[in-house]
Amino acid sequence: MPRPNLLFQLQLVFLIILVPLSGIPHPHVFISQRTGFVFDDKGLAGFRVNWTFDEMFSVMISEDFDSDHNQALDATEVAVIKEKAFGYIAPYNYYIHVRIDGKPFEVKFIKSFNAWLDNGTVCYEFFIPCHVTAVDTPKQVVLSPYDPEYYSDIYFPDKAPLNIENAAAFSIEAQTARDPATLIYYETVNPMAIFLSFKRK
Image 1 (cartoon, rainbow, N blue to C red):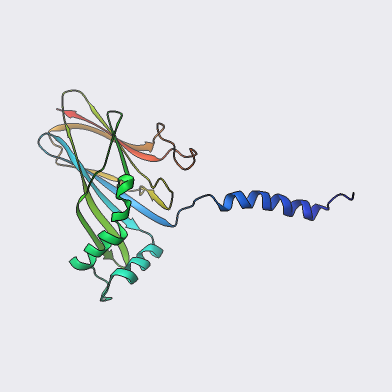
Image 2: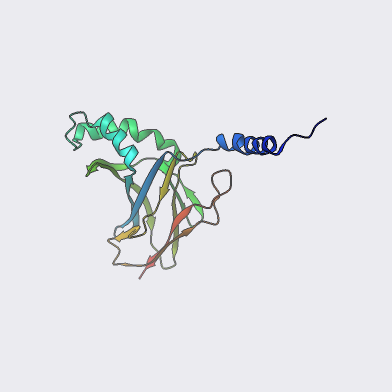
């Protein structure tokens, strides 16, 4: 039986590699996230999340939900966006995955949702209540934003990825790094996370 020629072998290898890869999820939406850690008199009160979307998603949202095409979103349009272009991620913790002292925190609801257009770029902001009372020893909070199905890729911007609000009464340390305790996307990636430690002064 004649040996297949080199071109056929290369084509076969290409198909073997390409076919499995075609079924691997890859992101279609890209989101830059800034996170505010909001404190009250007792300790952590929650997270203020700001999302800035990529150009393609922004065009889609603008075309579908800016009903009067004035490049601004009124309260009615924002309510429709919340229902149809945000609420569906509720079963996934709104893509915000939190651990408090090593234990998972379930994001059951959000507050103060808003959406707007910034020179054509779609932005969302929402607040996640999460009450953690400060004590004399450090409380550890890990917040990692990711879509477990990898339809959306959420990342921290290089500048000012986080800020702390109303925290004068507390000693706080915070940094961003990959979370070695979590593997996502077929257990191939450690997601980026914010590691925050706080206690009473």
